[in-house]
Length: 107
Image (cartoon, rainbow, N blue to C red):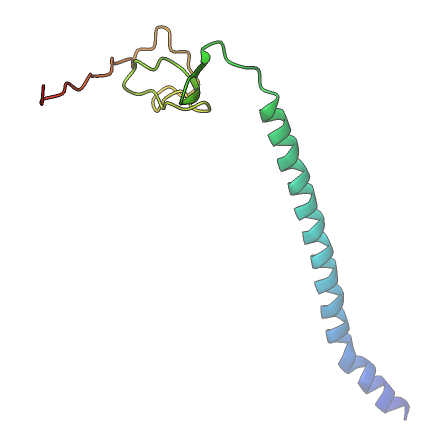
């Protein structure tokens, strides 16, 4: 009788250990996901508290833009200044190229 009971206990030990490891891993994963969500929300909050750039302006019908819109590389966006110098500033930028005006050939 004691031998049978010992055999059952030894047979159940690996599955009990596996169950314990799975629960511990699940708990650790959910904790890490919760912490990542908190960090992302903090980052978004800090990003939204960013001071307004001095070269940000509102263009009727388009919205907020930053940077020199006469530059060929300007992104025409309120979030990204341009492709080659996204952090700016536009004054004195060595990549500045004036945008070519397209003339109407039908006139």
